[in-house]
Image (tube, rainbow, N blue to C red; front, side, top):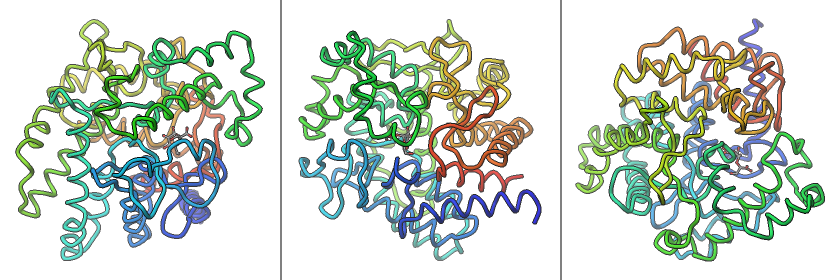
Length: 437
Ligand code: 9WN
């Protein structure tokens, strides 16, 4: 067996180990449930060797869809998980009855996963597949723009850092530190009781505390979730009382691409998108440009409350490449920035540039290299014709997995592994990369 084949088999074994019978947990212990964008990456990997199972993964994802169209970021399985009881989704009349879910969403990658699976199906099955999921996908995009774009400008807002999928990335940390940390949590920090509280944290039983979100931030995330629960996840009730609302750059870049995929599916099926939604979809690429800073020459997330850009750099700045709607000139500029040493470390792409005050090589979304974001960037690079650069990124990513196995993330400085293992999307993305080399 050659090296590539060996790696493929090892990655397949990870997905098998994490298979819960039709859906895949991200990892044992730490993440025992089904997560939204994880399952999308997982289906993208699975389709290469088990198309039926990839279809099942997505089918199971829609078990969690709410009556109002929302796709939740977590569908609970039977195992225990830290913070399990925070959501109590039944408090909303929109939540499904058959399963327990969270009350928030995650990056809208599901159009991408449905499309990539459809591309491998025979003609007839493809049509049936798209027909089956089009109404559900449409309901999700309608929910996003109806509930989360109250000004009708083509940018959706997020109400919790977990919705971004990049939980503790600098724009979110800065905003929650400035506006959201409740007094009792500040007190814990002031009295240096963090280490004591850490003892009751369950995630740190499996991964070193230095590789996870800090205790103060973790408590804040739980307290925001509780506030959302009190409002029964009703956006209209949440908005007037929320302290941190962000038009997240990564999320909106992914949504712009997802909108194109939704529109392509509609066209293939001879369906017409609702007029109001089509208007938003047309606005979205222009709205993304509102997130560009002329002074800093990069994209940022924006506060929904103040309309100000949150000028803390992170890898999200490259995701407009993935949206595919920015100008060639802008794309070339981003590629130049990507090549800078802050991001293009020995094992790129650093989730936060090494020059940032937030940078920590092993701490979650504050520096490490992740395979899923490398996937999004490499797709974007391909779209703009930077094939060699995309190939290089896939190679360095595969090198990390080949050397250390399917860890959750890796130090961008020396490639040392961090987080939980075996982690499903690392395996799935590696499989997709292997099929592109
Ligand atoms: C909360 C499952 C998820 C990923 C997210 C990642 C992390 C959860 C956590 O794990 O989030 O949703 O416990 O911190 O940030 O992107 O989907 O792998």
